[in-house]
Length: 550
Image 1 (cartoon, rainbow, N blue to C red):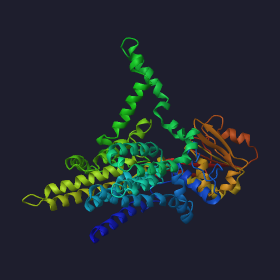
Image 2 (cartoon, rainbow, N blue to C red):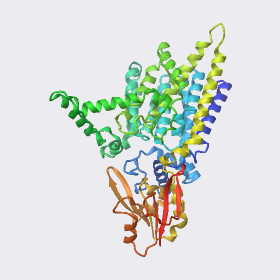
Image 3 (cartoon, helix red, strand yellow):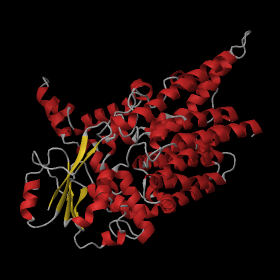
């Protein structure tokens, strides 16, 4: 690599870091409950060697009952050890590996296309990608899986030059399976697909392939008890299309409205056929122009609304890239096509927020590779003419990219936090800070679970001693549909104050002569009740109201 290319790569990596690090503790506007869980469990491991459930260095974390995979939690320990149990301590980890993914993308792209220029373009496009920036500014496990997959693919491609890399590539690919549920499906399928695509090459090195397979199997052995126990399917049960309550109802509705003679409605409308239809629909939705280039994903926590997952200017270059993959017969074209097509398989069997940016983040690097290749080929199309139009083309591209990135950053840093703070569970930190200042004044603190998981926010922001929590005699958990909630620990009680059995007045009547502090949502307290403090979402709507009974 020449000095100029090296300086450009350093500049791109620095840009990637700044886009992910700038005001990362403030935007997204709050830690969500998954980040809180990841952070507190990492803190608990750091302090005690046990998770919140008292399990010693677990391979999976029960957390809220969905059994989180371990990689993100263990990787978060250094950041929390250095910076503390706070927003920056939790989010510095994705900032670092998100930036490193940009760097590794350069090396992967360079080895595929044998071009420093295309490698620099791909890493630059990933550095400015709305899809990747958003999901590496918060502690999302999917972005860590992407890091390991890109690293594994780079080493896998290097193996075609030096076969020892095939064995080494199994390490990051195995780690991706410990990171995120989509990778649990994607990675094994992709490895099998790659073996089929390059079977002639692999068959020439059976010893290396066997050693690679053994390496992968050994690395994945700790997950065997996890799958055999059924815990590995806990998350899938929560999001599977077949566990959607409306799944069977819709089948029955189609049967009932059909005018076909019996038994055709039953043969046409059943779990198998309707499931295949829904899966196909879910899969194809992720290739829609609206998702990719215009509006993006509907889940407000996963994407800035009104902006595509890819920039609109990338659309023609993606098409040109696909065209030239085959026109120039790029050796690894089917590797890239398989990567893209398989990235959307895991999400197709889920039932919520389709299309889904988080579960399909595995696709983001390959889009940048193909887009970069298309951009380079488009540039070459302008170069050989009598009048060299390449400078004009470059100026237009720079202007369009600058405007696109400016629009995205303005949307993200000036509007996003205010509009969607509720979606990020904003207000919990402020509520717990009030508790921290006044908890000694009360016998019991009642904190509504209306918004979800108040116990974990309480543990996190109080930096509650993990040993004290693990052995707390007042700790009460209860399970609801594969989800575990904490009802009590220490002096804290987490009911739903909207429930007729746990209303404000009833709790007071059950606790005469006790000093009580209540944190509830609007409407939880009788009209005219004196409110000690109101906590608002960033758009001005009321999040929590705090009252006392002495």
